[in-house]
Image 1 (cartoon, rainbow, N blue to C red):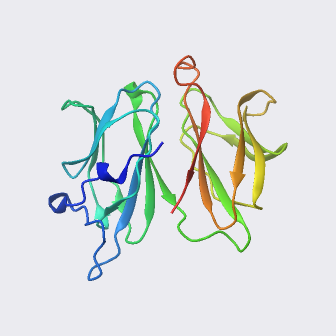
Image 2: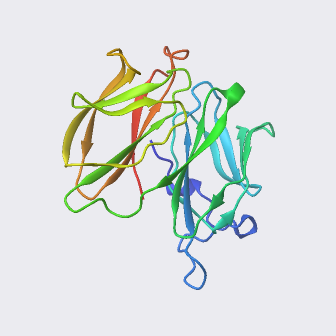
Amino acid sequence: MRFLAGLFICLLSTVSVTGCGGDDDGPAAARLRVLHASPDAPNVDVFVDGGKVLSNVPYPTVSNYLNVSPGTHRITVNAAGTSTTVLDVSPNLGSGAAYTAIAANFVANIQMLLATDRITPAASGQASARVVHAAPDAGPVDIVINGQKALANVPFGAISDYLNLAPGNYIVQVNAAGTSTTAIQSVLAVSAGTNYSVFAIGSVKTAATNPLVLKVLTDG
């Protein structure tokens, strides 16, 4: 699920958010999208430098990319419609770079994971994909692709490097580390020239409502 572009406020000059068309005279904008991946958190509002840029965002929604001037910005996340701040971080965003800010963990210990997204195409004729472990009570995991272990003992909060893949369909399993016990299994379809982020989200605790799943996004 993606928010419509209209949910972004493109005239927030007071909070250093650039116009939708960018600025040819200054440094290239950074691009930032937000993923609500806290499985027991309520809907949230997201603010950049005090200006609301997203409203009433439910789990597990991801926004479109928002253009932001390069530099340090204060990002706050409130319970929707309230002044109760559950997350307050100030990342430094680089000119021309793209990022995914992930609101992760259970709400009592919510934290921001900041992933730098690949914006250049994968190697010729290839796709690329990385894994983000954002399932707070799944424990360390192994990532198995078509029966072969691709990543071992990945802890919660880890963001892997991008792996090059030939175009096609892959069976991806998330196993408890060091075992054959599969917590998540899904088919990943990848196309040449495209970069993907694969997020392990949900939790064991919230299995009835927000179970463990893989959420796949295209990057850049």
